[in-house]
Image (cartoon, rainbow, N blue to C red; front, side, top):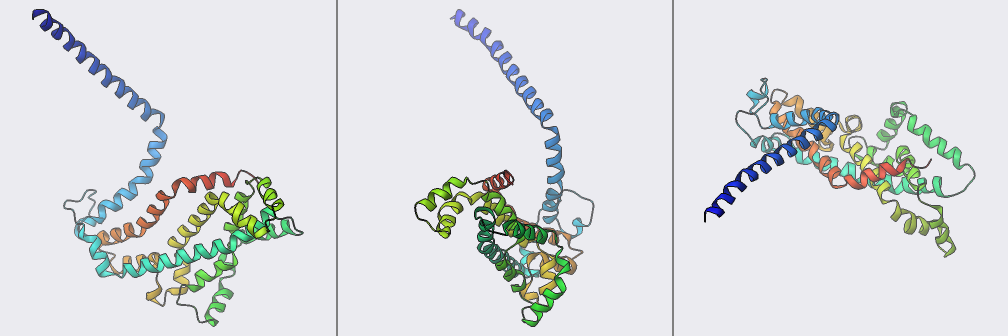
Length: 299
């Protein structure tokens, strides 16, 4: 009995020593990780700090939001409900979703065939056509805005979302460039084998190239969707006289003007405007990064 007691007494200090040693090792490992990634951690904090500030202010009272407090004294989730009661946020979200979705779909329908023709087909004037696409990318939209606005006015479409949606049926220069660069990374042998089997160019594009180009297509679609969701210039130009067609960016700006003292409600509306884009990005983050990574491999 005494021997067992002695053995237990001797093992207890050893166990304490092992525990303290493991704690030191974990602490050193943690400090080493922080030291190795110090720059990344600092940049992450710099980017996350404004977002955290917005979230915290969205839960404050209107009086506290005007002070220098960084932490809510009392939490008010009802601010998010008040946003919908004091402004037609659901209408703004619906209009923005309609604009971003239709513009993205129309862009893909028009830009994919154009990018395929510029990357996979051999025809006279292909390089000149690609040069024109590059020139369109460099052309500021303000240069052609006046005649285009006059055209939409004569068609009686101003005050609606269609002047921002329909032009995507004619292709988008940046999207064509991005898709072309990705199509060039796909080996030519796949298309040649399909042609030998009797496939037309349309079937080669739809059955061979497009399934292999899903990351590039997804990245291009996300670029267009994010652009339309955040677009402020287009809705201001074409829909400012019709509040029923306002998007979330224009509605958020007017909401801030109406309730500029109530910064808590403005911050809550900002979070609601950011949330759909954040959800879409994190759900498609892997394919988005893959598409961007592979796009510039081959010129």
